[in-house]
Image 1: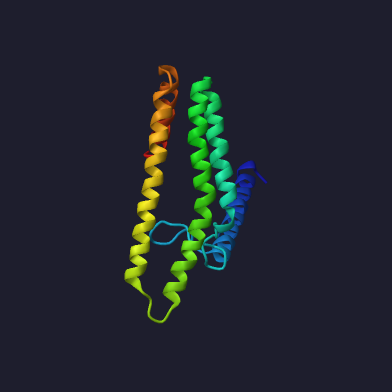
Image 2 (image 1 turned 90 degrees about the vertical axis):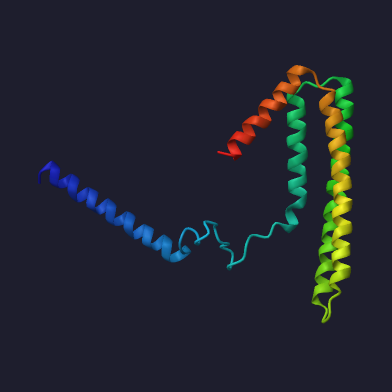
Length: 171
């Protein structure tokens, strides 16, 4: 057999194996995505449940904040402002998950009734939105106070990080 024939036969076998593997993959898992371009849930046709992982997410947020704060080489005054900001975020994360869980149960209980009180439900949602905006307002004030305490080199590091992330997510 000549070399050209061996390459042709070997390539044909490789293509055949790839086609069979692709057919098996598609028949087992369905198409890559639906018409809208989103990946459908593969766990018994449900999306993944993120509920019990709230502690992991909050720990990750705090770890990431601490990591970035260490990179800034904060002074004592800056460290105190950072700790104040971090404490409010920690308290909001800890209280927020339980409050959200209780509110979700309240909404589900109200909607499961035969004649749900939608106007009362809307008022409670408005109240939650106002409470949340107050917490965000307080946290943003602390963040602005912390940012104002930084020197120009530290501000440049933060600005560079923000610009890189924005460029990455908007590309």
